[in-house]
Image (cartoon, rainbow, N blue to C red; front, top):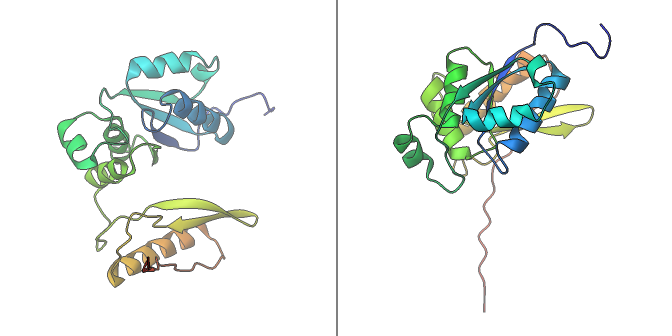
Length: 198
């Protein structure tokens, strides 16, 4: 296969909340298409289909990529309460993306939108792992010649011992699944109380 040929099948399909984040849907779709081109992944784009179609039209090669659009007329804004927004709005872009993963139409979910709404939509669509009380957000960080995973990046500032254990067990599952030989550590939030003396 030459560099100009596209593979006929994709490795996996990613659900993308096209309406989440700053400058959506334009910047979100630009990034999703760049990933699809370079990583051989398919996309499920969720959001207002008229806006998504207009953005896709700016990319001449979009028709060659594995892209599916799911219309979702509602959006959870960055300043909105996730709980009330997801209750009031039945077809949000983030909930439709999470549902696509739950139905097996995508293998992962990406959103640059409201973090609380993303966690709540994922919880509502997939539920929790047995024995786990709280979700943990993960972020990839550069680590030498590879990427490391930083688990629970701010979702739980008040963790009890069982929550830290659950996060550690989840990390170990990721660690063994990836076949990595890297060490995994546990970092907890340290609170420092300062007294201001005037």
